[in-house]
Image 1 (cartoon, rainbow, N blue to C red):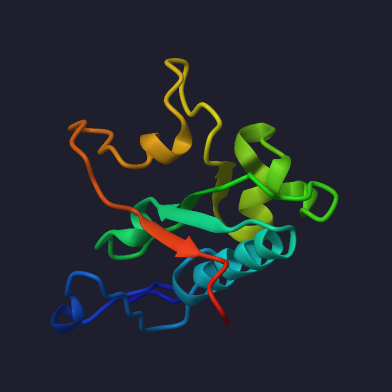
Image 2: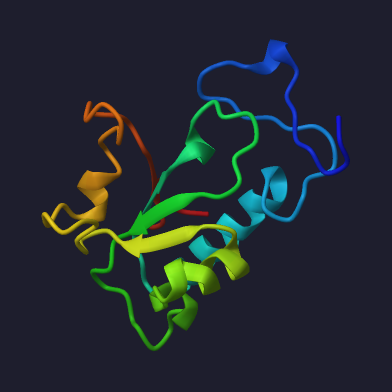
Length: 142
């Protein structure tokens, strides 16, 4: 294994679980989860009630390099929101640098056809078949 690589023993590859070994690089494994957690904390502090997690991070991909997420904008106070979460310039470079992934308002169009991110994330890009995503209820007690 190379330095900074993430790997999982074959025995832990079960649906719905994710575990890592080795020292993670800044945008993989536990460090990636930390970045997502920081983004969620910022959204929650601004009044967001739900975040949806998608991308290779919620699959069995051996070492996801980022995450994709969308969030409910209803009730969010833009003055309390980290401005990086509204910066979509340069292919979301600021979001990737700060959090390790990309986050979009759920009801914004993801593609020219008008499909919003929440619906877009629930379709497999290759097959068009429905797929699951992870919903995080931010109103739940801590």
